[in-house]
Length: 263
Length: 278
Image (cartoon, rainbow over all chains, first blue to last red; front, side):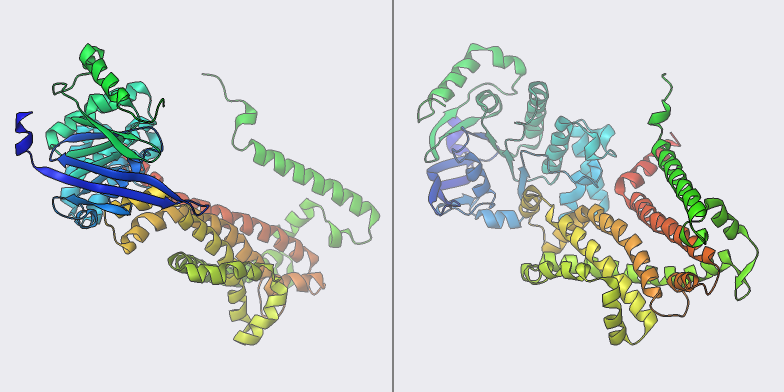
């Protein structure tokens, strides 16, 4: 890509390592020697089997995990500084909704915490719910929604704060295939509209290839970055691209870049 | 549409139990009436109790039996309510303190249960010695008994907040006070009400029980006088029924208040009002 040199680096990860102490008192190396640059507005997936440290890497970027080696810089700042400036949007695997709040109030919650006034909160929440197609459900309670709809509320909430960086930790892994495909399209549409940097953790190869500009393949024991695969499928992505031979070639390429034998 | 079966109705089990209790009571009363000399002291017929409630005969101080019960109920219930509210506030506050400070929890939590284990009647003289006033000590005892279920249940509510919610608040860089007001306290509210539902009948029981210790009005006081035959024994039976009824109602009252304040209920009311009645 010719414009690569002109793109602005947003996240710089250098020699990152994370070591946990397990219950037996042994040190477990979750992640070691990770070097990665992520550009502004890029959609990057962290792909790997369980135990490869992909969630640890994501949590380190979000300042939810303290690295034991190396460093992370986000536009020159530490993850903590970025977090304190409330520039992260984090989407967990579970929707993490608040049952006593309506759908709309759930979307408004981070805006309340960030001291937006009532009018602005309401306006943004309406806008976001429209975007994820849940406008009619604004006054419903989370328990009245299906799992897929709850996850959409979660995504609306994350985008509502207009984060600089959106961090997603296997957000669709608990959903059925049909819902998942629908949400993939929704997510890409919203991402295109808002042009945020997205770091997306998944263990699903097809999902990573379909969504991303680049797929970072992580391998376990110890967790490390073993390959970065450019995904040169045209944008906007459409579901029928999954049937093309190029898509399948990319899936194969990604699969072959795992280290550490069969999964 | 299929017709609802009688066994599916909400009131079915209530009616079943009522009939069962009435039947058992009456069988007992018939047996007692044939074998004992003064059956009304042991188990009178239900209609006799009902007659006593409705009778205009003066039993004490120119008051009918029902008046005696109702006028002394006022004092008892007021003390129960005062103690209950006090226990509720302290229970919630203490749960909050234990959540805020692990040290306080570690120090206090294992011993909280001891309060519950000491019999009320054993506690009463000590409290009386401390407060020096029987009315105050009645309130304090009702408060102590209400305190424990409210504190433990509310604390459990605080602890039920899962890690994801803390993580989410952390990514928002939310302040501690915000986490309490927006996450912890709303999560604990249903648990708090569970505590209240247990505490309310206990406060009433405690209040009646402590009444019996000294004179000066109250249901428990009338109860013991009636048992000592200072007035009609039917006053005793009326109090038994009345306090059972109030105890059950106090629990229901808490459920009702919980429903009123629940966001789901308020939300659905708003939605209905918005749609112009649906």
